[in-house]
Image 1 (cartoon, protein in one colour):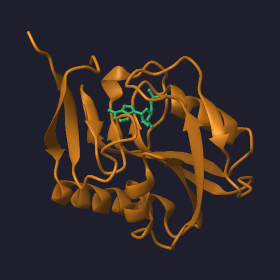
Image 2: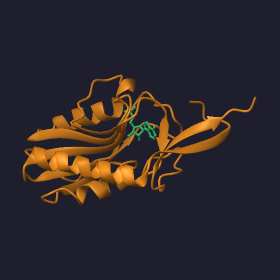
Image 3: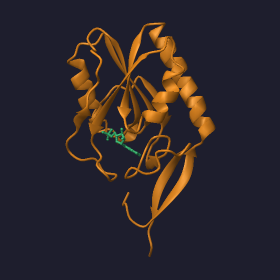
Length: 181
Ligand code: IMP
């Protein structure tokens, strides 16, 4: 996608569809952990709304923490390097860690985060993502709890942005650019 021309937004997943998906994911996660205490880690910024809706449906209530990775800058194409801008404050050794992502695209961001977290010797390390762009994967990463499957396109809303815009939209929209000819 070329970020130029007029921006066009189309609803892809409505508020109701998101609500149902979050409920479904929470059910799958609760079944998997069978009452074990989990540390849920939100990948900022894009995961903030999804995370807040998800953790309120987990039982028992998880410990929560946050990381921030640097990857996309202000555009829509990934840069080569990814790093941890903000680390968790919780010790992960011996804990059941659930990473909560907004979207997994090439898998590069997640691969680096999983590598870092694995080195801290958690009891288990699993991943939940609201949107899974699995066709675009460049690195093989395990996604234990995938939500919506998205074959192509760029999405915004419900926490996800384009140049820091559109995060507060209730629904997930596809963003396209109108090209003038
Ligand atoms: P990856 O390293 O290519 O998997 O990129 C993952 C990160 O890129 C996500 O956590 C998002 O922050 C961002 N990203 C990837 N695709 C989209 C999209 O369609 N909309 C908004 N952000 C995206």
